[in-house]
Amino acid sequence: MITEPDNDNGRDEAMVFVIIGKAYEREGEDGIDIHVILKAPDDDTAVREALNALSEEGFLEADLDQIGMITEVPDEEPHASAYQGALEGEVSIIRFA
Image (cartoon, rainbow, N blue to C red; front, side):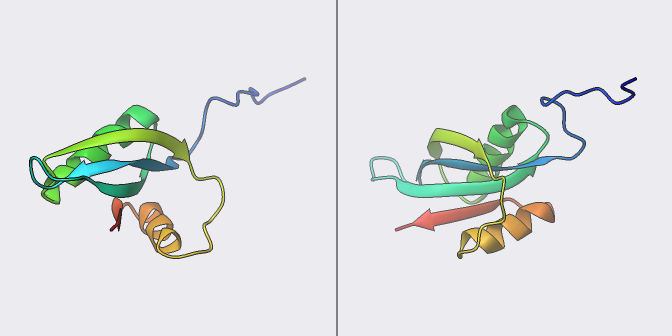
């Protein structure tokens, strides 16, 4: 007899997401390629928290193109540090100039 439900959609802990896009600091200027890494219970919350963090950092707007879950610990910087920060509750914004 099965006592635990087998449901791949449910998770006991929050997931670490990476959101890829472009953010704009000034109107009329080219955007900056960004990755936002954070922990959230679902993708809607992840997007909302990413947008809030970008706003707090002074970005006027953002085009978020992709969202995905990080399933393995990254081994290269700056993503490795950002992943660790996400596990500790931080929202990390990685800028690519």
